[in-house]
Image (cartoon, rainbow, N blue to C red; front, side, top):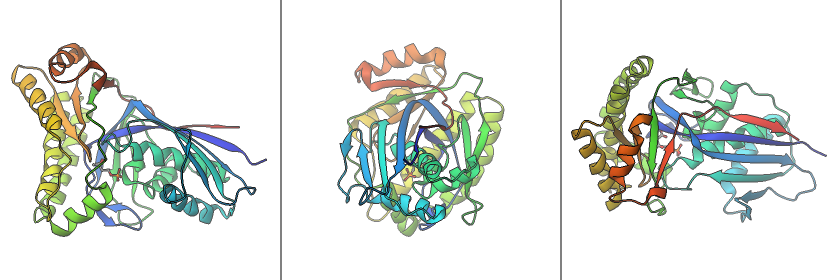
Length: 326
Ligand code: PMV
């Protein structure tokens, strides 16, 4: 009987964002990015290659997916089969502890876990750098979810040179995120299509690539100095520039809802009252508040004017990928 490998990977939220591909086939980004891996949101995935199966069988949160729904996963498994020389279909069971498709980067933890579990189940013994490069082929943000703490993805110029590595792990200072989980609507446009459109049509795109470079340098220094205000300020500006690309695309698009703007305003107001907190947003309506643990109560209390307590989820820096074999 073939072995089953289970991997657990945590989501990450980018502080300097990846938003645009240089090579869609190899998933090479236009610019490097920096993220924080979170403890609260993760994906667990088991993979068994089984010659008895006729085709890949993918269970997502205990539900069997139709082949059309699991196409992206099968394409990724094809890459693993091609590299390992294995031909068998795979049984995949994945449990997501992340609201799917709502801008909490479920594809990051999802493809990181799939890369680790499937490559090990296929008999490949990849080190963390090779796993990061493999995860990149599933989803760009997954490149970073192999690692814990603060992570940088080097854009690179080919398959070999585009991978992530740890900047700081463990994170031994007081920084966390409060995820404001808003109504989980389906994305108006996928991140893949959104990125392609901004690269092709936003007149601001060259400025984004240029400022991302500066943001990376400043963010590395802010993390090394354990400076929450600097990390938060750079992240907030960078996030709004990413969303400005979307607003400046043709046709324009955005991921905001009315609740998104309410949460942004609440964070801005708290800051005006001296609370050290900042926001960031990804390809979905949710707002992530970057803050210190000792401000949790004051921030949650303010946000609870607008949102239910269960919509406010505190996440601390989280660990890198782990694997078990059975
Ligand atoms: O790799 P994807 O398709 O999940 O794209 C992620 C894009 C952002 O989450 C918006 C930014 C990032 O760097 O994670």
